[in-house]
Length: 380
Ligand SMILES: Cc1cc2nc3c(=O)[nH]c(=O)nc-3n(C[C@H](O)[C@H](O)[C@H](O)COP(=O)(O)OP(=O)(O)OC[C@H]3O[C@@H](n4cnc5c(N)ncnc54)[C@H](O)[C@@H]3O)c2cc1C
Image (tube, rainbow, N blue to C red; front, side, top):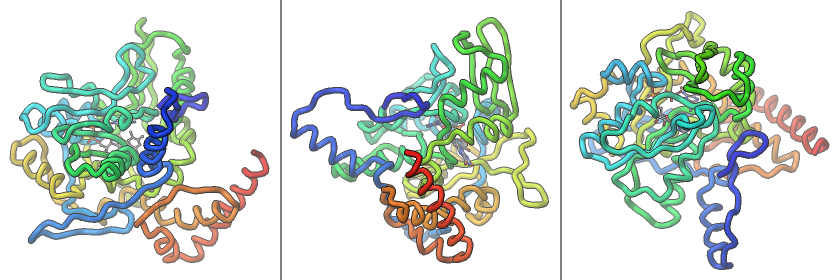
C-alpha cells in the first residue's frame, strides 16, 4: 500500500509474479479487499446471555461506557483510552504476544505508520486517533492468533475475510473503533501550513486529538514553533471534507467484524448534538464476540478499565452520522448503479430494506446520488 498523489494509500503491484501466484493473489484480493466486498459476520450467541441488535450498530453481546483507570492512558487516548489500556494489559499480562496498531512516524510525525508493540513497549505511543491514511492491515494479515490487531473497521473486515478465504480458524483478537472515514494526507499538510508550520520543517510531534477529550490538533517543530486548533475546526474544515469516496459509501463504520469496538461516547446538548467541550474521555464499547466479551469482563476484574452497561440505543443517540450514513446508503448506492458505476458488494447488511423504511427520504437520496454520479461520468 503506497501513498498516492491525492494523499491516499493504494495497493500497487511490486513484483512480477508467476501466473499461478498472480491468480492466487488476485483471488485473495477479490475475496478480502473491503473496496470489493464486505460481508457482515454471522453473530455469535452466548449461552444463557442476551444478544442485542440495532440496525445501525449491528450485533452485540454486550455494550458499555468505559474508560481506562490509568489517568495518563485516559488522558492520552482518543476518548477513554480503552483500546490502549486493553492492548497494553493483554500483552503485559501474557494473554497476547504483541499488538499491532498505528502511531506517528518517529522520524516524520506528519506521517502515520503501523507499529508492532511487545512487552515493555511504550504503549502510549499508539494512543489517540490519527486522522490520516495508514495501512495497519497490510502489516497484520499474517499475525498469529496470540496477537492483538487494532485497526479501522475496513481493516478488521479485510483480516477476517482473508482468514476465512484461507480457511484459518484461529485469528488474532480484532479491535476496532467507530470510523467516519479516512481524510487525505494532504489535508494534514494543509492544516499545518494554515497553522504557520511550513512544509519540510522538521516536527517533534503531531497529534490529531487526545490529551483531553476530544483534545486538539497539535503540532510542534524541532525549533519550538507550535500550532494548534480545536478538534471541531480541524475535523470540520480540513480533515473531514477531504475524505475519500469509498468511506462515504462505507456500510460498516461501526466495526462489525471486530471482537471489540470503541467509539466516542459524547455528551450531548439539549438538542442532542455532541458537545466538544474538553473533559475526561469516555468510550462507548461493544463486544461483538464471546472472546471480546470475556476480554472486557477480565479487564474490568483486573481493574484496567471501568465499564458500566450501556444500551445500544443510547450509543445510537450520540452517533447520528453513523446512523444516517447506514440508513441512506442503500438509496445512494442505487443512484450510483443507475448511473452506470460499479459499486462494492455488501453482503448481509440489508441496506435496501433499511432504506425502504423511509421511502421519501430514500427517493431524495437516490435522485441526488444519480445526478451527482451522472455529472461525474461526463466530467471523467
Ligand atoms: C479515521 C478515524 C475516524 C474516526 N471516526 C469516528 C466516528 O465517526 N465516531 C466515533 O465515535 N469515533 C471515531 N473515531 C474513533 C475515536 O476517535 C476513537 O478512536 C475511539 O473512540 C476509541 O478511543 P480510545 O480512547 O478507546 O482509543 P485509544 O486508546 O486512543 O486507541 C486508539 C487506537 O486506534 C488506532 N488508530 C488510530 N488511528 C488509526 C488509523 N488511522 N488507522 C488505524 N488505526 C488507528 C491506534 O493504533 C490505537 O490502537 C475515528 C478514529 C479514526 C482514526
